[in-house]
Image (cartoon, rainbow, N blue to C red; front, top):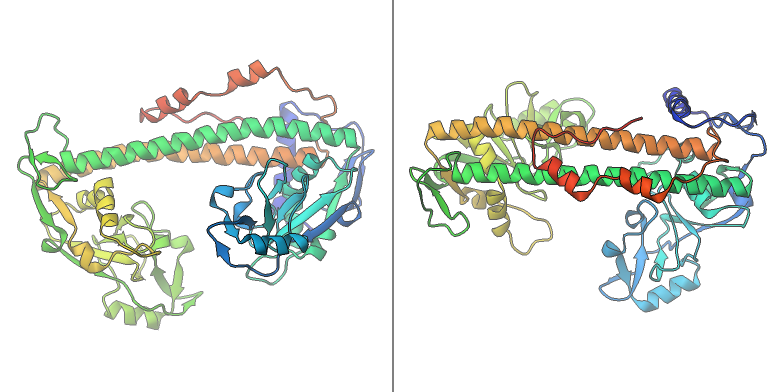
Length: 494
């Protein structure tokens, strides 16, 4: 398998960075005989998975799902070396027993490998897991004693092996690895003692990285919570803490500043939605925007679909093209995300899953945008949706939404304030996401370097537990970062 040029460069760069920090290469290497693997340490061997593992997959038919019974695990349930049983489906005990007889129940120590749709995620099966059988989208890999199971797990999820798996997939919209192809996967076999050392090292180091990633995710969640609270308070209570208040007459709104009015959206806005039929998409033409394309006051045109110019012109005539200053509101599936349309955007029409809200001059458009995405309004929208698996707001319901009308000058002040403050929070969230990307990149590089012998770990020893614990940030550290918009996410060293 010939690796892509950019990929090879990434591996080389990552390995050099790791060696430059505190990891050294083996003293002697030899040619692996595999172009994309390059050299491997002396004493290591390359082989095919089929020679040292029993390999099969799960059920090739889907039994009826039940509220009670035994677990039935698919690709979506397999995470980073654990199974999400909380959200997994169940099947009847009778169906479970039949699938168990057919070999669809993994044994303790087996490795589950995702092979359909999502490629190269894996999990070791442990004794403390509840009983379950698996779907055919998962491979079951049962290794001989020549393998340390944890080393094999890390090898299977390494970027080298995942890229090898992708190289064996051809011409299918759904990425799928057959069992016969998994059997042909090339793997590396260090001496068993070294496998154990590598596995222990990776367990220790990835646990530290995963802890840091978790802290960053907590920070993002707290910042998002602070952002939402800031918006909801400003659009319903104003900016003056000393303002005289009055009863709004709406239980979920409570008191509002004197001088503010309560109304329904339909009295001050023209409200409609997009196309109720889906034209054929194509590679060239004009943009056709749906819920998934609308982000935080922006539209993701990079991943948006396109339709022919003729279909675009027809939908424009039908009123599916928003105007400058209109607010797009997500109303089907994802509820309450919004975006203000501006002239810098390319031409586009929209799907019926988006509402178009065109306000009169009584509204500052940015204030209305913040009101629409506020927690108060989103909860109001959800309260009007009943009995549907797909959450959907009709245009008639959007027209009935209760909204607040401060004096126009106050709307402008609130909008300007929120624009500034949310931008600060969004910057911190972006930095935390970048930190996560760097940590995940380092995790991937570390695993690949270790399982392919680019770094020598034979003399590695785990540091004292007390030193590891001292290096970990506490929950209070993370919360303090989220409570101040001038805080910075944790620095990440490559």
